[in-house]
Image (cartoon, rainbow, N blue to C red):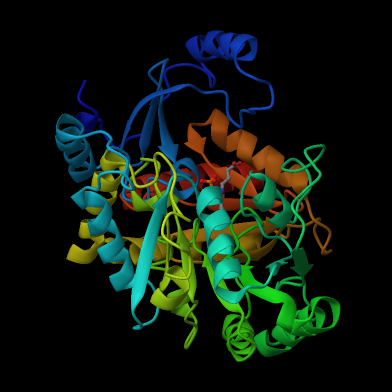
Length: 444
Ligand code: PLZ
């Protein structure tokens, strides 16, 4: 079956997980390191648009996009064609040995669309964490300083440096230390849990005081922030927070870095979540996930003078900006440039947000609904309190999975359900998936 022929409908032919998935899961536990976990033991064979087909023939609605990766939709026709064409021409030469065109094309498009009109350069890597590592390397080289600041509830990856940058020790860090030094955690703007009425500027002052007193502005190379936090639970900082921090960073010669790995690439209805904050222009932007329809590629894009601070040969890696992944990225990016994709994120928000708000009015277990575009979340509480309710999230997501809806959880307290549907999802599928989730909440 050609994936492009997959009907955009939910269809359950066995219990979830089905017998073949259960068999495979036994084998997985036998052969794969138990350190590599499984959120949903349903084995996927093919996919298109917003539908996943498992090995038992069940068709599931995907509300997670493989954690915000296939934003353009599964097996997007132009991405598939670009990959096939490129794989027949050149799969590898190593860009720093003998270069090739798709790498430059990706950089050119990213330079055009990251926030800020200044002269830019890009460098390509493989994963989000690798790009975060490189952004920090570049900022340190440019400033000649060693310390960096990151925020409470942040997530930046699973390498040694990025583990040090994560807020949540478990499951990401526990037992894997010692961790890289020079990483300072400062308070985030978290409107739902901050003192009532705290403005973005006030929350920024709180973080700045910490950086000035505890670290010292002159010691800081970079401030690294997710403009909307991903794993932390889709925390959208109060308006003014990002700009106030960035203005302070600029005054102190600190490189402002936006980790847009989860929030970027049209997810929020603009190229980057940073674009929503008036006057916020990060010096460097970290890009991965949604950039290439599932092919592994990431980037750091930013001010030319910062990006060029490294001596030639200081940045690189065997596979960074691999030709096939780069060709896929060009196919995604040119669809974004052609228009229509951002409107899909708006369309999704127009369905998702009012429905979630209406549910919140009905179910006191829903404490907060937040997000932007096709990046929305519910934070669950024990009714009538601010106490995080991870049990409710577990029950609702289990209900969704058993009914053929792949939905992801998040949050420092594990009490958030997040929505990251492929932008190709139809109104009907999205509404059907929300019916399933609402039934799960009603059944609590
Ligand atoms: N920065 C903001 O969201 C990846 C993690 C999945 P990599 N988030 C999903 C998991 O459990 O490993 C992420 C992110 C932000 C960096 C990263 C890291 O990106 O491509 O997973 O390395």
